[in-house]
Image 1 (cartoon, one colour):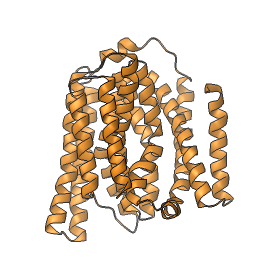
Image 2: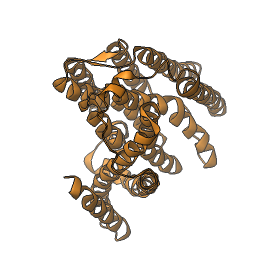
Image 3: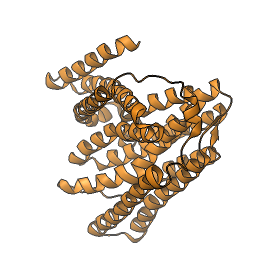
Image 4: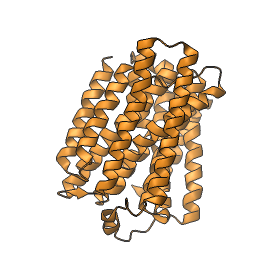
Length: 352
C-alpha cells in the first residue's frame, strides 16, 4: 500500500485538476477534489510526521496539528473570499468537534483495542481542559451579548476583533508556556518510552521540501473544492451547516485523523492527544480569530458570532472530551463514548 500511495496521490491530484480546468461539471469536480484532498492531506501528514521525528514529540505534535490545519485554514480563506461565512463557521465548528470526538475517539478506540490502558501527561491534560473552557467562554460571551442586546453590525465586528485579539494572545502565551518556560513540566515520558527507534520516511531536508509541496497542493485542491460547494449542497438538499460542520471538516482534517490513529496504535497516546486536542485548541484560539482579521482584507467582514446550535455542539464536545482526558489516561470504551456523541451530533446536524 505504501508503494501505491504516491502514484495514487499524483493520479488523484491530476484528475482533480483535469476536472477543474476541463470543466467536467460541479458534482464530478467536487467528488474528485474531495478524494484528492484526502490523499494530499495524507501526504501532508506523512511529511509532518517525518519532520516531527527531527523536532521531537511535543513540537512534532504541534507541527502535525498546525500543518494538518493548513487545509482547514486555506479552505476557509477561499470561503471568506466568496462571502460564505456560515460555511466557514460551520467548518470551524466541525473541526473542533471532529478533533475532540472523532479523532480523539478513534485514536482511543484503536489504541485501546491493542493496549488495555494508555497514559499521557496528566498536567498537559489539565492545561488542555482549561484552554478548551477558555475557548468556549470566548465564543459564548460575544454570541449571548450580541443576540440579547442586538448590537449593530459595526459594534459586533469591533467586539469580535477584540475577542479575537485576546484569543490570539492566549494561544501565543500557551505556546511560550508549553514549548519554553514549562517544556519539561509538560513532557510526555510515555511517548518517549514507546518510541522503538523507528526511522523517518525521508531525510530532514526532503521532509521540509515535501511539507511545503503538500501545503501548496492543499491550497490548489481546496480552491477547486470550494467552487463546487454551492451546486453540491443545492443538488442534494444538504444544509450549509451540515456540509461545513461535517463534510468540509472531515475532508480538511484527514491528515490529523490518520496521523493520530497511527500514533495511538504505536502506544504514543500523548502525541495522539496533542494532535487531536491541540488541533481543536488551535482552531478555537488561533485559526478562527485569525480568519476574522483576514476577512478585513475583503469586501465583506466576518464576525466571531457563532449560532446557538454550533455553540451547543462545541460545548458538548468540550464537556465530554475534558471529562474523559483530564485524568491522563484513555481506554477503548472511552473512545467509543466519544464516537457515539459524534454520531449523535452528526445526525442532529443532518436534520437541521
